[in-house]
View (spheres, rainbow, N blue to C red):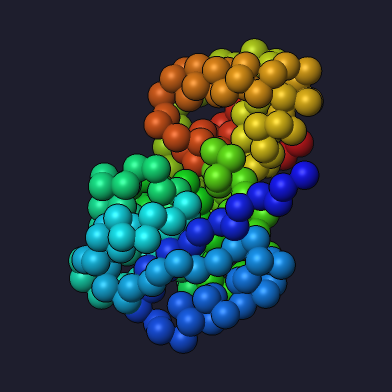
Length: 213
């Protein structure tokens, strides 16, 4: 059985040592399953970097000099929508993370994460799921308004699975349906919740009473 191709990662971060560290450590920590194919310390150059190196995932530091990481996220999503964006930050302030999610990031991870701990979130993001630290999710729920939406049992199970970051295949096994059906159900759930992506759906999970289960 052929091995899965390596996950191609581009780094947008104005700290050269951090970017260089990821370039050296990610392949070693993931047995070659993740490799850095390009990096830039200039947020304004993020979109052009994606066009040049065509990564699967972009890791974007939110705290960069102008135009800043959030604008870099938006530019990447606008010019190369195929690239999944993972926002990163060295502090615990939920406000920039929320702005990044609204700008199109699929995930948020702390910069304190060890390289070997990045592989599962990257795989989940590539499978189409949102990844948020539990404490950040709770902070977003406390700080943001949310209209109550009535969900049936199946929708609640699906939303709980999305909030937990489970893969399409895992959810399909849990619900005893095909992966195609899970994708169709997810699209319908996003429309019902009036959100544009799985990250926003995960943030709404608490309003359906799912996070305390």
